[in-house]
Image (cartoon, rainbow, N blue to C red):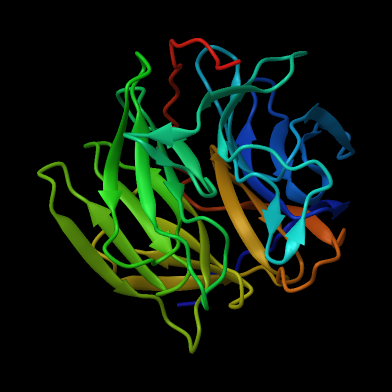
Length: 300
């Protein structure tokens, strides 16, 4: 089915926005990769810099400690490179502070380009690391986790690159992600087995962000599909919501669903500032949002 939902434009002129997270006062913070910053939009709908983090941040999530945890890919959006490159890492940004690097390698493996992150119900931070988007010469693909006490681990080391992108953690601790190269959605179950939920509809689905609805349905953005897929928990397609543009990621605040939209694909070495932030009402709303904090000192 096609959901008859009407997105409302909140703000525009954004530089590859992704990874929105909702603040306690209802404002939204998301990344602008081309501007190397976190951006805040409040009730007035105006975008303003929240924090400059160098490189190209790919997503952010609010922690229970009030800090924002950031996937920092180092400075790439397709063929574009940031003026101030940095170390691919997980950053922590406290209000009014500068970005701190928490981790840049796990079990001796250096990160290539962390992409999306989320807290699980036990406070563990989970993120995807697909590296730079380059199907012709792909980087290795990983999913990592960082426990509240700062212990990092590899959750999935992919035998072949799939570009794991958006990621969510379900109430039972299962990790679900989508893959930009394959168009598939997969789940790492709590018993360690991986379940393939199937390939998304369309000739060439390029998947990006994810969210979980209150009923357990999975929402998956499709960069070329100009909207997001709605799946049952077992992967059965339930419908599609058209937003237009190039939707990158989404986040729930009750029945309000925030959607970041890059507007165009990242096919140029020149930055594009046609990105937008949309808001719509999704019946039933979202699943509970988990928060956590990482009790470790930042690296120098």
